[in-house]
Amino acid sequence: MNVMGHPNPDGYDPQSVERKWQRRWEERGTNHANLAGAARPFFNLMMFPYPSAEGLHVGNVFAFVGADIQGRYHRLRGHDVFEPLGFDAFGIHSENFALKVGTHPAELIPRNIARFRTQLQRIGLMADWRYEVQTTDPRYYKWTQWTFLQLFRAGLAVKRRAGVNWCPACKTVLANEQVIGGFCERHPDVKVEQRMLDQWFFTITRYAQRLLDHLETADWSHSTRTIQANWIGRSEGAELVFETPAGKPITVFTTRADTVFGATYLVLAPEHPLVSELTTAERRGEVAEYRRRVAAMDLVSRKVGDKTKTGVFTGSYARNPATGAAVPIWIADYVLMEYGTGAIMAVPGHDERDFEFARAMKLPIVRVVAGPGQDAATPLTAAEPDVPDGRLVNSPGYDGLPWEEAARRITDALAARGLGKAVVNYRLHDWCISRQRYWGPPIPIINCDDCGTVAVPEKDLPVVLPALEDFRPDDSGISPLARAEGWYRVACPSCGKM
Image (cartoon, rainbow, N blue to C red):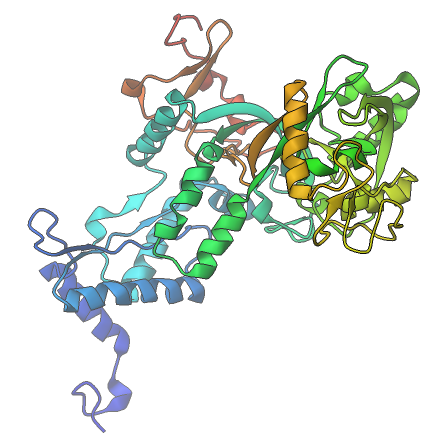
């Protein structure tokens, strides 16, 4: 048997053969792209790996080989293929690995990159390594900071206080997608908490409708477009105003303004800014304790629909704008500040969560929509959110109207009184980009006592991450960069004060 021309199969050394040809490819510049003179350019970019382990795993290789096959196919079709590669070396994955092995990321990550690069070269990727990118390189993240400044100046990067998922082990904020069943994806035994922190957001919600409008033009499968449309989640409805004794009205969003006559109570998110003002003296202790318990929950588990409903009464009432009746104001964990206005009008007759809550708390349940064979007195043994051919009942002035028409008329009538308006809402939320960690590109913003939030001048970019010996995060929710006083105390570019 002859293998690769060698008379003895046992003498075949694949590693030496691989090294020979890899040297030959490098000497000849086989994978070097002629960017300036390409007649049929094809850009073959794959996702950069995180150098946050001792080396590549088989899943990495599986993904990179697939992308490399795409590049080889186009090269054989006569394209001038440019296949760059790099390393997503900043971020929590790299920092967590550094914490795990007890080595500073500035020392560890370059070693990991060298190991990853060698492995990627050994599997024979047709990458042009002359254009390798490392996201930890200030020459690279200068441009991520520049991009941030463009968004900031356009009003698309904003800082505000928000409820966020907090991992006590990672000691940083988590996206909802990183919370699995109430636990951190990186620490399956660590329960995620909720905290209120000042965070930077990209206001992607401003583009929600544009994203929806252009979905059909995307070269995606129907199922992918449907998932994206549901993620953006457009809903048409109304904002209704419930007046309170405190003088500050509560605004709620609803897609079913026709059911306002059945709103028998209001529910605020425990984080709602009006909770403290609306809580009466005798209810203050119970409300404070409930808010403390909810703060220890993560946002994802609060969204679970079939969990036991909990909540407490604030002691205050609001006026139903349609009936004029006083309805009690509760707080409950199933209402979130990140959705709508952080307050709901509860219609237990026609919403399953409201029905369960009303039954648990012994609150009134009223039917306001009836289908064929039903009337105003037909009992409700369960919530009826969707009533086929439903018409209004127990809704003076609107009884007998189809619910869609009634919703429009009620919204118009309340708008004329300054107590409502038609609005469009979206499930999509602004993108939180803040992380309370060290290993990442600093946000190029200066906080001045006199001028407020001031952008770092573009000529001063990049804002280089300082060397910090103790980079470990703590439970304060404040970045370790706060320890680098000599780095962050700088003159304001607007007024010149320190």
